[in-house]
Amino acid sequence: MMYAILDIETTGGKYNEEGITEIAIYRFDGQEIVDQFISLINPERPIQPFVANLTGITNEMLKNAPKFYEVAKRIIEITTDCVIVAHNAGFDYRILQTEFSRLGFEYKRQSLCTVELSKTLIPDQKSYSLGKLVRGLGIPLSDRHRANGDALATVQLFKLLLTKDLDKKIITKTVRADLKQQIDDKLIRLIEEAPTKTGVYYMHREDGTIIYIGKSRNIKKRLNQHFTNDDRKSRRIQLEVTQITYETTGSELLALLKESEEIKRNTPKYNQNVRKSKFNQALYQFIDHQGFINLKITKVDQRKKSITTFSNKQQAKSYLHRWTEEYHLCQKLMGLDIHKGNCTHHTIKPCIGTCLLSESPEAYNTRVQKLIDDNSFGQQNMIIVDRGRDIGEQSVVLIENGKFKGIGYFTLNHQINNADILRSIITPMPHNKEAQHIIQSYLRTHKKLRVVPIASI
Image (cartoon, rainbow, N blue to C red; front, side, top):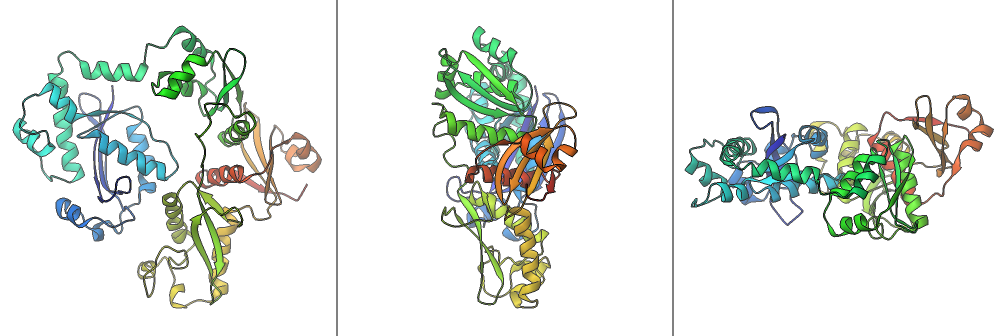
């Protein structure tokens, strides 16, 4: 059994509006630490004064720290196949899930709380706060209220708890939660028959009616999650499902597009309300009185044409900060800095002084237009080439005049270089705001995808 023992410090503030300021994670195999990750995090929001006094972490210290999206991949890697362990795990796990959800990523792990375990295995302690508890147990604790100090103390506490757990309840509980061996024969059969490939799956009840549609990069693994979850909806699906059909796509992008369209067409009962709002923020442009192109994040307005869309405001701001540096743009004209005078980036040089009128609108707008062209369809004609369902096959998504036209598969390059053949291999699909969001979001996170401009067919 592998554990990720962690501690998180935050900015404080309103519930679910906190940001991470520091994180420490120790990957622990039950015997020793096998990996670790420790970092300050720029939360992109101010620290509450009382929290700064408690932790000693200041806004100034975090100015040049990585933002969460820059360390998210490392956090996923070090916690993969791990049970999250933390002192008051409900808080730390919620904060992590919140940060990942702001990036449009669903983060799920099992978790264990050393507060609850300590109350069971080390009863009658005067206090179960981390500082007082470890002091009473003779466990050293340095840098109290700093992530690394608290995480290391939690490692030592968890070691002690494992030793005291003579009935092996900790391991038994996590194994039971992980495997859920109570799955009945029907569900075991459905899992065994499922492919491990990327694609879309359809759950049917006895009369053939589709009750749920989903997509996954590993259909078998995703079904195992469906059939081991014990929330109300999962239990209902487990009772009703009798058959599962599949359509492998090879490409996750095609799976996302097919899932979205199939849910619209079939309106399965257990998909309702699940995907009401894939995106609610959009990026718009306007020209100010000095001739500079400004960018602005706001709620989606169906009457206006957006550059691109985002799952939420935090995700949008994260990308704008990244693009500000990548394209050397001005924070003020990106709507990220509302203070008077020059933007903060001008001081540290990514901005070359646009906010002080040290360059012409024409020069600045060229870079903004490059950002817009890179992240919107405009009136483009292009194909997106991704992996296919088998070796030698590739998938293709067609965009024509800025509109999503459909998907297809090919084995030889001449098939996509010939307009008549390309038209014949494409399965038409409707263009809509959701399909556009799926494609743009996928391109943002898969920079190595092959995107080929084409003449209109």
